[in-house]
Length: 188
Image (tube, rainbow, N blue to C red):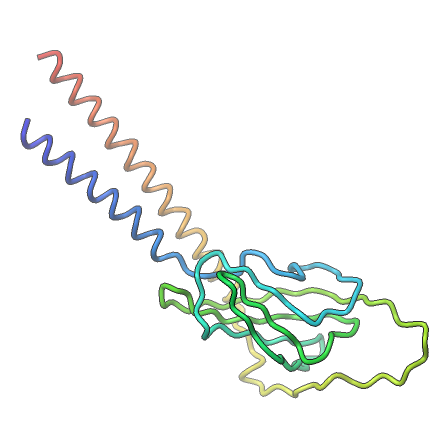
């Protein structure tokens, strides 16, 4: 009986530690954004907000580019909880945009990804000489975002989900063994 109790307590401790470790090892990925991935916005955009699914550190960065690969200047960045807010120097005119981000999670692991949106702002009726927004030509190395970033996100989410499934299976097995041994003990 003492060995059963010791085994049962040990299994519960291991289960508890596995559950806690999967919580603390969660990497930070963009959960939602404004504008959202794939969204068409009907007004100019001068602020982009990314909400991460876990804590992020101030080393988190973002690069905003248009369909031609031109980079738009970021004026300032804010961190509010799990939100990373990017304020652009100039509003984005109509066009297709990509936001490539790199995050340093609170767990110390780096993640990266990207999302896209379209600005379809109505032209003002007044004829005003428009200034081109300040565009920075990107170096080839800065522009390149690994194609595996999306695969990494999917793999990470699968890893997190499989950890949860394993934890649930272990919990069911522990309860099943406990019921089995308790019912066997009561018959004796």
